Length: 617
Image 1 (spheres, rainbow, N blue to C red):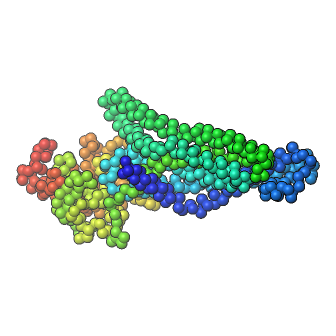
Image 2 (image 1 turned 120 degrees about the vertical axis):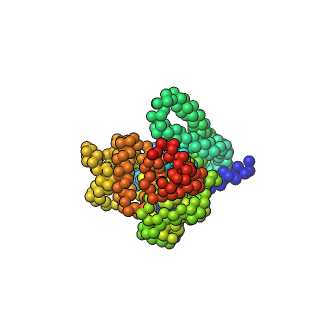
Image 3 (image 1 turned 135 degrees about the vertical axis):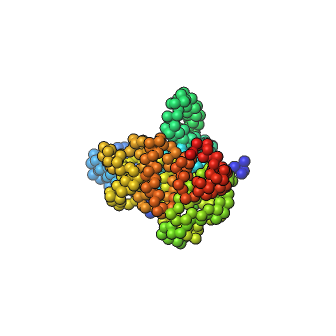
């Protein structure tokens, strides 16, 4: 239990550090916000104190007036309030009421002249903090290694960007805003209450620990339940995302009812937990409200005896003002307890966001990387091995040399490590042992951005964006003229179908390119890959998911771009790599054969077996 408590304290500390980090740039603006809130509360306070004079105007003291000197003996506040009263009553009772009304309106105006800018200021701070968090999260996501996304649920990542950030804003940032207002209000009101009557205020303060204890008991387990709630929220998002992606399969396998039942079952569990969390949050407010009003009643009784006994100069008018101040202090006190509850709930979101930003980036760059000007001689794999974080070995002791201008084909059974081997070149992963050299220099010594800028990739999964054809081809490039885009499309055998579209290169292709065919999507991907004229091309099963006609068109495009380029081709359809300069056969993470098509056929090994299985002649 002690270990668990220590872990929770560490998590809470990490969540606080996360908030401090993002609020740090806005410390000056937060100070200005506190100043504006202080003046707003100050003019509210003066408005309440003016009530004493208004009561005296409506109900003048017996005998007409009380000497100011006598009032000074009783209480300094009474003295100055009487001074103000004498000044106003000097104009006559009716005019005094009008004068008091003007003063009251002026005080309300001044109060709002400070409260509105304070609301604008804190709103700007909150929005900018949320903006900074989103920017930092997005930047972190783009820097993470591909292995992280392989092992993580997409829905969990999306939930951090949507639900967690919204919850963080509504629970942590809003609670900080409420805490500042509550603390300033409580402190200023408490100082005035102490000034009016110390004995009565100390009596009230004795009751506060009881309220604090009750509220803390209510919110005690709120943080842990909120963390579980956020995890369930991310899983719910993941289920929704998987359903959208796999709707075709769900319908074709008549699994609609099954999917509905699975979603509804989990959603019911999520709703029950959410009800528990919000019941605890909602309980804090009425409990604090009841206890606060109970305190008012007790103070009414105790204060009345002080007035009756003429103790400590507590006049009836001041006692009424005291009660008003105390009653008005209940809401800020209630907001304070509610904000603490909300912050405990929101700390789970802060922890999840902090955890995401603390994920180690295994693909790092040296402080002074070497410039990469392109491939001049060769790519060499020296005793390269790779294993995922869980220890699963994918590649073992790979030794391979690829000369400039050569086309190397990687073949082998599914799961043998072909794609992983190709992913090591642009450093989507880094080898766990051994090294990869380009022109004799370890690729980890090169500038990562420049290295990837000289590599073009076309994968089996066509990844396009909901944008125009031209913008998809020019993706990642700045200020690319139309002629270069058209030239790349022509090389990729895509120009003819593009110009036949409604708006040509300015035609939108829908989400993931759903508005065009698979072959057309792949040819746009090829055009995008060659737009920057890369030295190295990686073609990862670029034709395996296409029909015969589309494969022929795409293969023609690939033949166009392979001229005078170094290429690494991963293929299941062995008919597409018969003319490769070298074919490397990989099985269970090891190179078992290598050579030309003719040489490997003569060896009568695994390659020959794979060819025969595909009836390749």
